[in-house]
Amino acid sequence: MSHNQRAYKQRGFPLEIMAETETFYGLDLGMSDSRLEERKRKRLSVRFGNGKLEHLGYSSDISLQGFFVESRVVYKSGAVMNFEIKTRDGELITMIGKIQWAKKAAPRLNHILKSGMGISIQKFLTGEEIYLALVSE
Image (cartoon, rainbow, N blue to C red; front, side, top):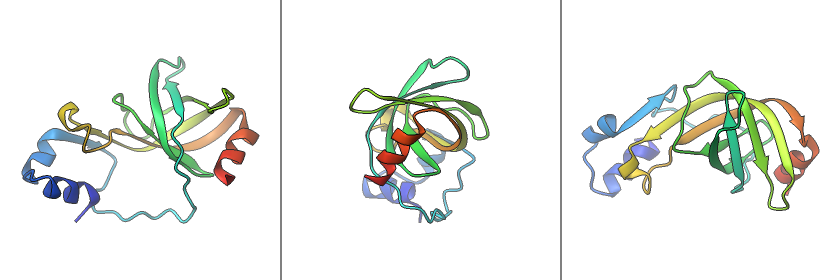
């Protein structure tokens, strides 16, 4: 049983409504976490968009290869776009990233399930050293 299925069951929701209330793009609910690298829990402001940084989200974890951004705006997997992470010190990290997977929960379930995207970093534009320092903290 996947994490999301357990979350539904624990809260008394029938599993049948999961398919009705969530849209998953490129995410296999039954897959196990195959990442070998350590992730650090970091909640930082993330702006993103296709060319223009028009959407806002927050990171929940980061690693050397990428990060998860929580957001109500979710693009399909495979999209390549610009990201800007703002550290607590106000430093900016800009990069190009690819959406590896994405999930969107129904708005009424946002307090239970996270909507967002798993991002793999393709290229740093600025602040690579700052990002690497965050991962190593």
